[in-house]
Image (cartoon, rainbow, N blue to C red; front, top):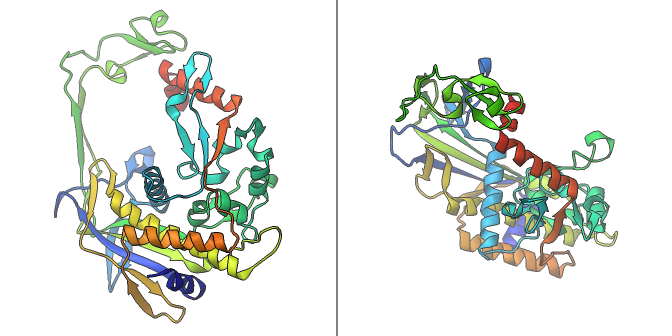
Length: 397
């Protein structure tokens, strides 16, 4: 795969896909734990469904959702960026040296558009400032607000991955009627031939604190009296402050699977809907160059996740069961294969970026660095104080 071939594929093909077979790291029969969602009576449960796979209908379980996969690929790109393996324009909010009274928020470091939940339109950026001006009122912020699929240049310049993984200006004018950029890449991992299992739990307290001991929990933590526990104190069991035994429990959680399938699809029609005018002037060659960069970034994200591995969560480690090639789905339904590893994907991305810059597209060589506004600092600091005092748990209850 070279740049010319990728550009032709982006212009003419229907999609690029890859279906990869994964197996539990513990081997056949090892139990894995899918994500949990609220079930009846709010009990944790997994997502099972019947799916057609080949000529058969099989019971499958969701191991990693589209949204979670997008986040993992973005983080893989962020880590590649931090190691100097690639350069991708991005926005960041820098908390270094930020304080609220005696509370130092420097440990938050830098939050980038590769990890913020809503990417370039996240509230973290909305509630930050550029050179003392609210970001949404700064020149680059105003350009983002005006962006839409046929005017996507500002997003491309500031954080092109937002166009790959999708973003929505949900806090825009009209109560969430801001521009929407559909995701161009979709990835999902499911376990095939899933058999539900059970999870056990218990704890033996070496101190043998008995449940009859009278304790209280409030704004000051826990104590032996309401006064010691502080405001809103109420009586609780020792186990609620992590003392005492926890009786054995059995839950319908965990599964065994025959194998897992990761299905990745890069939608090329989605990329072809994007336009990238510069100074108000449209140019088809420039549009094609920008779309090719986005396709290259999508492919790089997939193989970067391969390098990062498939440790989805505790007790859900998956490993590839052999190599997997990408497939080009042509408009006539024909399929062609091509291999791609991390080094080749980085080289392809570098070539695409070079061609885009030569076509006159903006490509920032430094991150757009913001600082949090005072009100954002205040709510983060207050949330930390509530968490330390136990107030956060009460609010959620």
